[in-house]
Image (cartoon, rainbow, N blue to C red; front, side, top):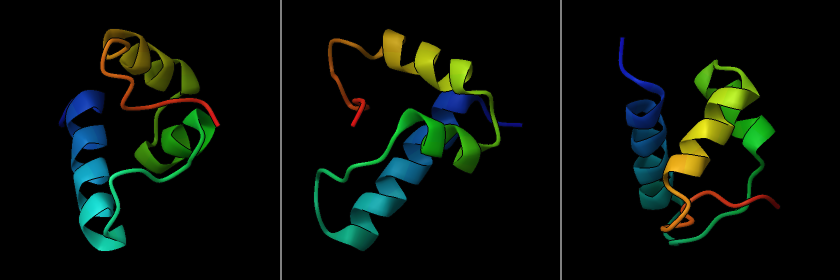
Length: 58
């Protein structure tokens, strides 16, 4: 099974391609449900990527 970070990256890239925009609003709760993980898993992913701020709370 792929890591949360790998699944999240894939989803973000696929969504970016389909939406045609570099930014799209969603919540950590939505992303956790989409990836099938606890919200804490998405929060820890966000904390590791904090300098880039690729995932922000809306």
